Image 1 (cartoon, rainbow, N blue to C red):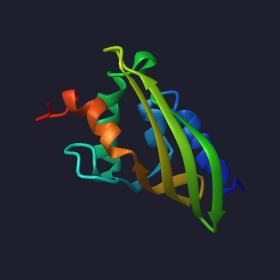
Image 2: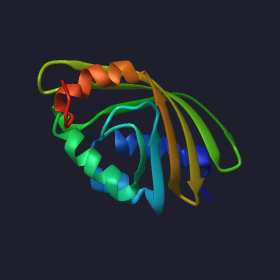
Image 3: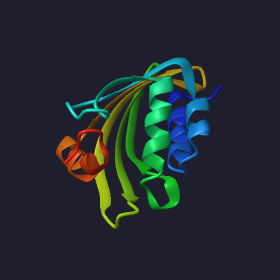
Image 4: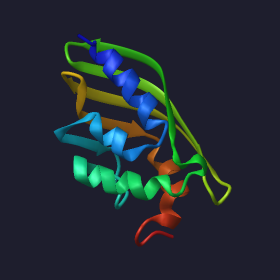
Length: 136
């Protein structure tokens, strides 16, 4: 059986390739993804379906259609994995999104059940606000 850390490591490798359908295939049907902050259309809790819509939209902004997330450390207890990671993407408008993350990830079997994402929300907002509904 694959360990929770291996599930998470493989998930971020797939995520970093930008294939939304493969990303979603690695989530349980009832998976949720919560993002810290109060940024409209980005923060808060997303269902698997809502996350798919968000990712399909976001990948069109990136050169190479992917946000690369590289785990720098992981620890786990049971089926919960804590991950520190670095994210990087060049956007089609020439800007760069480079952020640091902490993820709390719940694993069920060989798929992701829940994600809680903490990052520099100010940087996220500054980078993506021109593309958000009601953005600057």
